[in-house]
Length: 357
Ligand code: SF4
Image 1 (tube, rainbow, N blue to C red):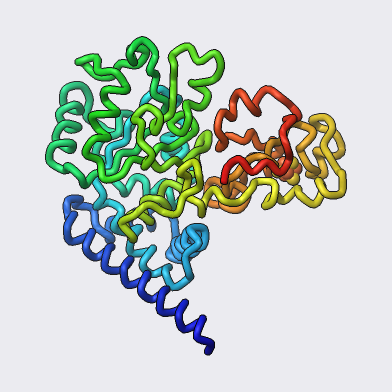
Image 2 (tube, rainbow, N blue to C red):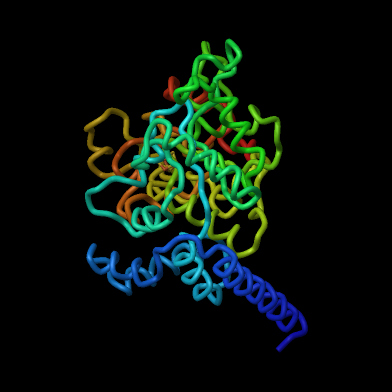
């Protein structure tokens, strides 16, 4: 064995030990949730999700996070410990699409189940508490779990009229006030979806409410962005797992998106790419090319400009993704996608535009 391979293997082993200790420590320090591993397994059985499916899912997430297969065991343990993380999920100016992507009730996927298992402490859309009860719940988490909870934010932050375009709760707190209050003592802030990333559709021209993304609203450069409209639930679970295992942010691109999910270009991993190279394009909806699954570039596909793992990760447990379903990519993970991509059939930018990294 060469010196290099010995060195790599020692580094890998060290990283693995760090992750194992961190998951064990996390479990010990945060025994707050009464749901346990058995609950998760029982729920999986009741939903006809077999152990083999779970193992395949763990292998897929481990590979997607660009971790060595040796990490599969600790990733599996991490998944079962996700219910120990105190989480506040805020809904600001949005359509709830990212929450909806998780909670669809038909054909539940493993990530849906995990999301339920996480038992969000505060989620305006999902929790049973309402009114004053929900507000005191939020106050309690902020006060008693200072520095421990993770803040996930979905939706844009309207800043126009001093934030008055968005008021939440009986006290009429503005979105930006609520966001600042929750973010102040959070261990980590994660912005999910395109609206939380850079304002998304809500900030489309002429942006009447002055909407911006979470990082810009907070004026912080340590917010993790998981862009997409909606984002893939697997990428949220993977980011939470990474934080749990390593107590640090995953490697990020220049827009603070996890590299393991946003490094690849849609166009480079698309199953229709061969047709692109051969000049075989769909020219009109329903034509012969459409029936044969040819490239959608001339129908407005923005895959050449978009960076995300949709073609490999897909949605609903790997069932499909927009291009496979016959609709071009809208580039929804990119900055200003709605104004830049959604209205033009052919984007005039460079095909190999590398503005994401
Ligand atoms: Fe796939 Fe779109 Fe690229 Fe065609 S242009 S190969 S459909 S990503």
